[in-house]
Length: 289
Image (cartoon, rainbow, N blue to C red; front, side, top):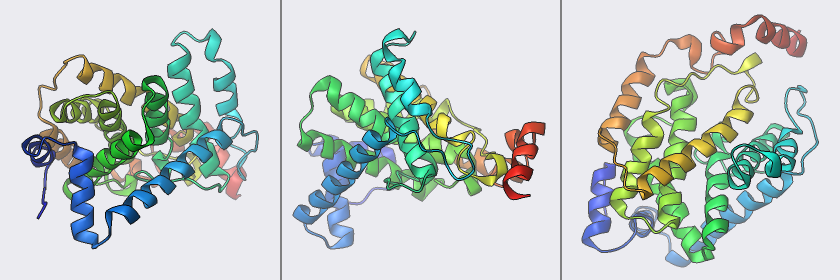
């Protein structure tokens, strides 16, 4: 029977069995959902297909959301890749993440991973890594299960909801999941996966959830692009041998405590932060009257 309540336990299981965190997660899901390995792989294949479709639609999207606040930025970022300061790979990831979030804003089909508000981060990071490393579909699916395992632990010990823990709970969790998957795709060890998660999350601690007009558009859509790149840096640091001074499970515990202590105004209520700026209030009045 596979059981884990922390990232440390997940890492130790992977090391003991000389396998990946993704394989441990899949075994855990099999035992707890009474599902077959074949069906679980097919389900994850479908998730990956939807992720890729949302990226493709997103980087070509010119449609505006119903509010008119978002839409058409992903293609601008994508077309700027060759002239960018950060380089083609980074800008492709940013464009992909923004694109998926724009697809969500126009009611397109996405995979909430872990939430709709952070839906662009994991797909963009994984596709960018897989294209760079020429990973097989089998390796990509394993990385997706690795990301899922990280998400399971965070949801059990903290929160993935902006209304509870601020945007650190949504984009922060997605950053940890994405960084973990990228380390897996890059041939990293289970320990390096843990360090990547810690590095990704601890540098987003305290992130406010302050959606303008209460819509998952501003700053959410562009934030997906920034956080996808953030997760790439965390993965690269871990793969380079950089370790988090604070252990990953303590980082998750800190995220939970910070989330609970954040004021209500910056936890998806649209009563603080950017939502309460003069422009934010004007947008809300224009959209809702």
